Image (tube, rainbow, N blue to C red; front, side, top):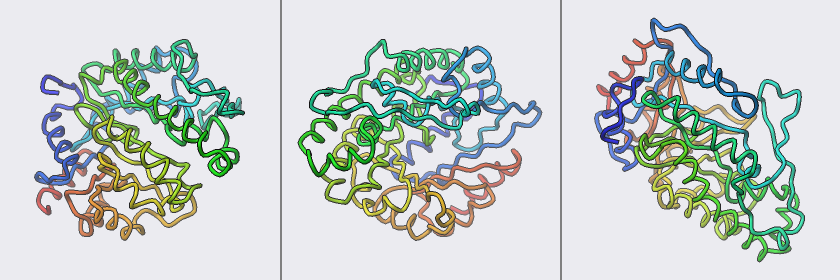
Length: 359
């Protein structure tokens, strides 16, 4: 946004130009690189826990969010931001499922929804009603956040867990898997109904968060001055290529088309059977590979990262600033995003200088 200024990002215009180059798979003076570190001379303020805002009043929370952002040095192409969330299945809660947050989860560890679809034929179409408690609360939270962060930071879009992941939450895994075999026509109808929710839900949150003025990020925080988000289909781990290509790939393509460009959250080796289909989705420009529990550490997946790049898609690299040279020697610089942290402002800036000198 040409007229956008952020108090916490004086070099916003330069960062925006690098992000635009990243989305176009082009290279400026270095790869797009986001580095966060404590801001010198500012008292440290911890960030709020996951799912903050789910319950209670927001005044103190909003103050904490802004103070935490102000206590962070946003180096390179890092855009000061906050990512709201009411939990992994918040989209299903918006669609009417009962959200369960256990009492012992006072640290906001997790929550879930109770499956509520017994008969697709009788319970379609899916809908998000304006008077749904969680939906109306999230809209109000976005509006409050946007007002608080105005002129300082950007509000990120939600982790929506849409398409098949929405059906999974509403129906339950075992029953949904059986539906694919027993009633594929009903799966067609259910997925069409889920897909129809994506654009209006995205657009309403986009409006509430004033993203038409600021641009936005997804929960995997790649920035675009117009629109983007992170998309995914974790249910892909439970289905084969034929089912993925019939149902999931078109749903993801529709989401990517609405966004214009996006990052894909690829969660674990079980999903790798679909890699080529995922990388072929138009508008899917970057993959956030997550290794999954009990698997090899991220640096041991260089071959996979190189394979993704060979398919014309950029890769997200979570690392310390000191680890960037390890990846930089082995990956194409126009198809990489370093998402890093550093112990000091000096070390963050020195790594950015190193990248310019070695790209």
